[in-house]
Amino acid sequence: MDDAQTPEPGPLASDLAATVGLLLRHLRAAAPLGGVTPTQRAVLARLDRDGPATTAALARAELVRPQSMRLTLAALEEHGVVARSPHPTDGRQVVLSLTDEGRRLIGEARQAKRDWLTEALAERLTAEERRTLAEATALLRRVAGP
Image (cartoon, rainbow, N blue to C red):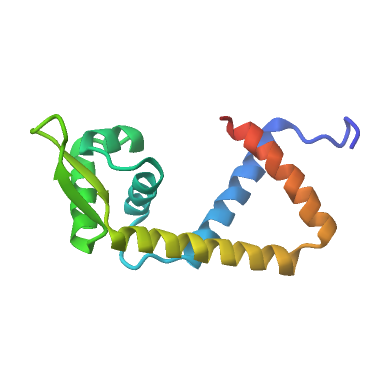
């Protein structure tokens, strides 16, 4: 692609953001977590990825107020997907972690997303397009940073 065909960063950023948003909506639709909101889903994913955490730590990580995080965690506890345990060194705090049911739910959701995306890639793209997408994925990883 020559300079005349090289997309400007602004329009490219808008198109990329819209496309990534559409892809994320398809992935969420492929893995419904009955009754779990997107915010609750994010907290479950964080606990799965980072391990047990306090309410304050989760609130900081998700950029919400501790009061809001308490409500989110209460709903997740009600669903039986997170559990409280005493903080090992600070008796004033509790640590929240995924239950076996929470891990199962997250695992099933991730597998459903992978299955949908695998099928979409196989059915909608040629082998050459999949190679191009692999190259673009490496570029997107660089854009996203460490």
